[in-house]
Length: 278
Image (cartoon, rainbow, N blue to C red):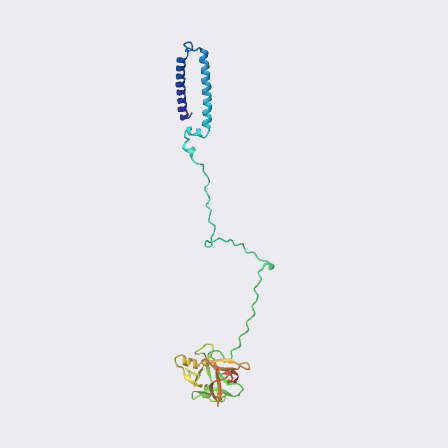
């Protein structure tokens, strides 16, 4: 029996005995003398009544002890019995992925696709039209300029002035060298060309006061612009006219066998063809 119940039980017994003694004392004082010495039957009846009260009290206490309020009289359980049951550790919940957090993506194994499941091939692009063949050979080539429609004539320099003369395989070495130029990338525009003399390296064909001369190269952009010409194809294949890069609309013409820079349309300019130099 728990010690709290035992104390309570002993207290109740003491109080019951005390109340019973007090009651008997009062009864004895109030009863006549013949009743103050009860018989054995009276004692037995009183004991039975007291026993009934004890039984009823015990049952009531048992019900109180079994209820929630009676738990306060229960003795404390051992420490090992008061421990909380062991529950499984909680599993942390990961936050939902955001736009900045990496998300693992599982790639399905690649399988060979059937012809019907293959991705459609992109539409084939139309081949770009072939670029026209250059009318002037590549830079570094040795060429001669031949006026179109005139047999046996070539552009040459004489006394450093550009002109058109009759020069052929039977001409002198000097004349053949005067009629041969090295193609260079345009000094002012690499898309165009400049012509350097073969027998006077470092001298380029340039226009000055709308006349054509052979002058040594000078520093600065003025000389480079004067010595740069752009070829424009015209007429039959391989035919072209030459225009000044710094004078749009001005093209090379021939007057009195001398080359000049004139403001003329392409149809009125001098048409040239290139041939291998001597």
